[in-house]
Length: 111
Length: 115
Image (cartoon, rainbow over all chains, first blue to last red; front, side, top):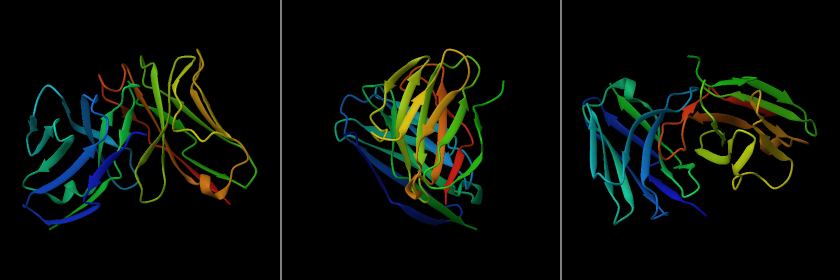
């Protein structure tokens, strides 16, 4: 079946430092890779996505990189702030046009 | 434009009862996805539907679970003869296009507790 591994499961950083979360996927045909943020008790929300025709995408303090050969992609958050504390999920699209999610990374930004 | 609406937000059932969870997608969206989230865990894909059709139900348990998305009205996730292991948050998401071409918008979730 479809599989995506996400690491680390928990991550604590000091405010202002960078955070990196990595995911490895199984379906080599995938071409869409979004990242979702879920605050405690809230719904997941899309924060950034990338398609396989590009290797990197940035949006202010958030960036995503994709290595299709190695089948992994990463989320980078720079200059972290307390409001970045949440659970982050990577996902990848399958051939059936649905999304499979990683197991999540709980990020804690320490003021 | 209202977002994805799920109800009930909280549902308590005793073992053996039925649970019905409803999801109204965003206006104009015809793709609906259901995910289950256990406490402190990730989002597990259950089923993907378009109007009147089940596209992919590979994540649905073979027994007791069913889903529909009729021509009129919300999508329904139905769990028959609930057991304690069914306790979880069930999230619905919708998209105007297939997931690989458009963002999924999630509802606030329905939290099922089985006593």
